[in-house]
Length: 415
Ligand code: XIL
Image 1 (cartoon, protein in one colour):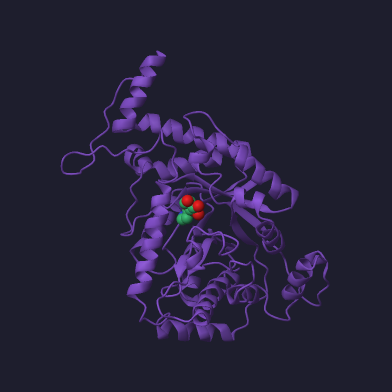
Image 2 (cartoon, rainbow, N blue to C red; image 1 turned 90 degrees about the vertical axis):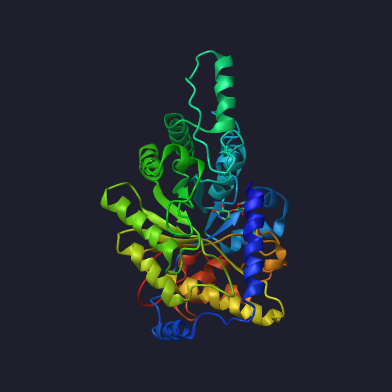
């Protein structure tokens, strides 16, 4: 199911690329305003950088492991903390793969971004909304069976559920149990959680998912409250894609966040996934203003899953790499400029291992683990050349231990 979603998205990205091959990068007005912004040297600040990590590749590929360890401060398990992985059978949790990633992160002093507790995809088979439909393809309401105490009764009602759906109280109990069990298990190690992933539809309404369908629109609020109760110290995020630039989807997310904050529902931040493409990315001014919309509500923001697809028919490789560097640089500069932006994460280490496939070449390192122009653009955005932050970052990569590199003047703080 997830595989199909991934494929669907890559097809969509590629189709967009082909359709838009003739279009330039960002609109000239936007490009101008970001050039003006760049004239003002941003205050040097080192924002922690993260990457999605896959356990099987970490185990088997030395270059992947070494590049991650040398270049990134935090990891997001690419799949190992999704519900399908953690609760493959109802009520039976399997933490083995996720625990191995946590031990690895601990050993190397890397932070962990928990991804993700409640999402409409990557669900275990037993929970999937099989979406019973009528002849017109409209969803049928779930058949509500009484919960029978006998184990055979349980098998019968589970089968009915599989075919028709869940009762609200039943799925709510499953959601709360999952959040409680998982967050308590990782408490202290995972300090930030994507509590709800991808809740907004393209038109700004709440996206369809089993959670939404069977619990109702308040599933988001209930998930956040359960998360706060399970681990009061963890930061709680809502994470979504295609919300970097103005539009109905971003408006929907802003509306949701505003409503939650106003009603005192626990929410600490918004993740902007930033899966994007050289033919249609948000420029620096656009992204800065998006981040500030959430900052004004008192929320943190993070770039949580950035990649920049480069497939365009007939465009030379150098030009593709140059445009990719512009897209990454714009996002990194926006994050550096907005105080509420607390981390910058790419969805993978190198083009060799990416959900987009090797042809899309969406990451900071190429398939041979060589740094691309995008890498330089990101590094320079966070630590302008010659700045104290740059010298410290360089010292850290050379093993001098970062903050111990002396700098004259203002001290650069790591957040
Ligand atoms: C993707 C992974 O990268 C793939 O390996 C997996 O097959 C499907 O999920 N948004 C998200 C991520 O929040 O969890 C998705 O990760 C990419 C899109």
